Length: 301
Image (cartoon, rainbow, N blue to C red; front, top):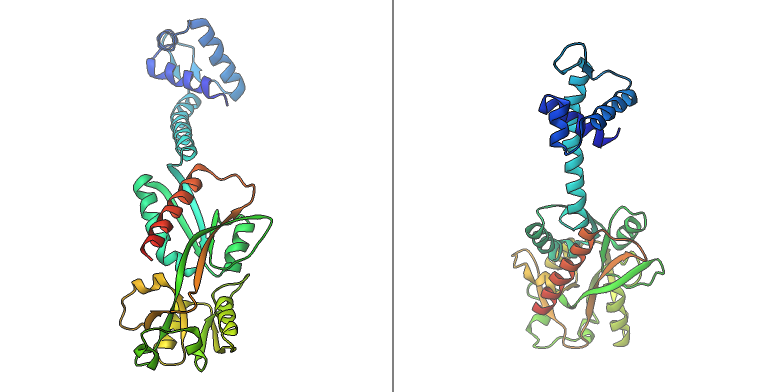
């Protein structure tokens, strides 16, 4: 249906006559009458009862008037939302991320996004790196935040932030009395390490550091979630490593988190998007906010 004809029809009904509607529309009466005839022919119904001197609507005309008003309002709303979507102030952003990103970056990024554009909805899918990359490649998320190091031709990967790794020790551990702890001091410890689901991550860096110090770590547990591993450390099962941002949690149920003197171990969060893929304005805005939030966190480390 031609929306211009529909708007003219609505104007005729609201003005009460073709002549008044033509004047309001800044046109002459004959072209408007011809336009209404074309609209009736297009819809195959009679919209006006032309038997009397006054212009009255048929039942079909009344139906079209009320539903037409709804359609015009809906169309105008859609156009307004489209403009807002293109301008980055309306729409939905979907991110896939690992747990630590969902803890330390996403909350601040979402708050800032909502402060700037309250009509934007955020969806987050949390999982390991393989899950996040699979969701990204299948276009089920707009961006991914992962910790593993890898290369892929179909993905654009950039470092979001770098932070030191801290050693997690159970209460009363003898190493807590040492002013400086090195990786060599961990030779006889039981290690609780995170599994790298894709590429290389924290575990690979720790194992390489141990090998460079002349020993292979005794890994007794491979996990996927940080907090369960920290609880095991708290129970004295073994030692582990976490990114420095976890030191923000001052919970009584978590173990001591201390830095290593030598070597300095670091971990990186990477921002991942599809290579050569169009990103809507709202996604670009969220990417900029996410980078800024991560930059602030890195400044605090």
